[in-house]
Length: 207
Image 1 (spheres, rainbow, N blue to C red):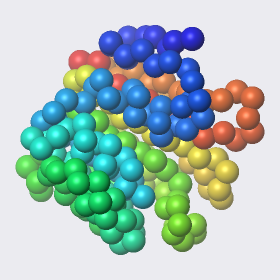
Image 2: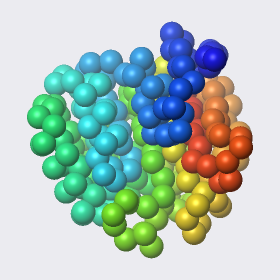
Image 3: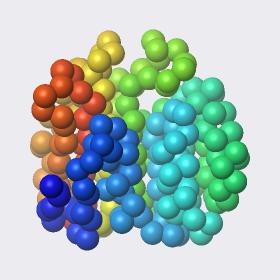
């Protein structure tokens, strides 16, 4: 079984056990979209896996911005990248992703030039589970990501409903995505026969 659609372009994502992890599914969609030299953003650094993935995609000529409000998450992300031996230009930002536009403008990154923005919502694994993403800042960050997105660029949002506040945040993001108009296309991927499964919202700018 294969997902197909305009938003995929040349992407064909096989349905395998990788679907059990929405983060892996997000990577599968992003790989054909990101090219060496692109500008990309990890809006929720967390354990660093998405930042490392993005750095590997853009290579030494690209640029990655990695956001997280928690110092422990930034430190863990730095360590993961150092341990990987992956080289490239990555800027760590210990601020709310709600400031994504302001921060990138300060770095001379213009609107409509960012190829990918990744969100992995919820809490930092291994950290304080009381510190979670929330509806207000998440929606502001997503709106900023839309403004930054280049034609053909993609936003991925991994949503989790099992923690306090998670269901409300997930529902708010899905409702927001449903209101998007051209040139954006929004898609929602979820496991139908699981209670409160992690889900993936994917948004692509078509032109």
